[in-house]
Length: 165
Image (cartoon, rainbow, N blue to C red; front, side, top):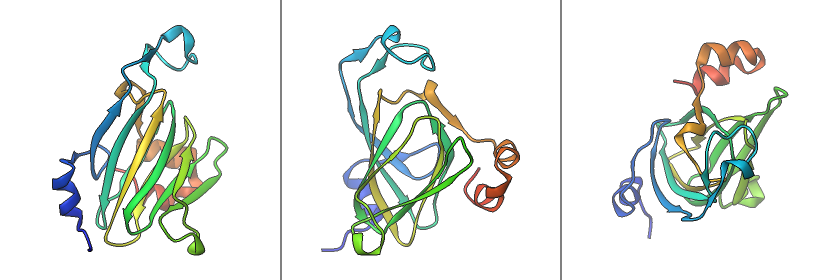
């Protein structure tokens, strides 16, 4: 049976995400890591881990942003999703999440803390999951300012233009 984006949005009660697409948090560890046990970039205690469902339709993209934790992406259903990662060095990494390893897809990939990243489905829609450790907190989230990101990484001007708000 083929499923549609609207099926998953309704089935999993996904809500609009600030960076684009739809999401729902499905797990937040009850246990926490105290601020003293975390790297200095964190300003307070954090849950050990969090996890979300994330869905992008073909006309949507997840705009460039970064977080202070590593984020593990998991592919679940739909068309391949390209995750564009700009490392602090300026190097661009393109990760293709999907279910076709013969065509360069992988089922899981990690975006390291502090990297700028954006994503876009190839066609139709992509349903993925994102696991963050230490757990996600909006205090650790930074949406890219298009102008500043283009100035910092002029070699990726067109991509930043296309995948920024």
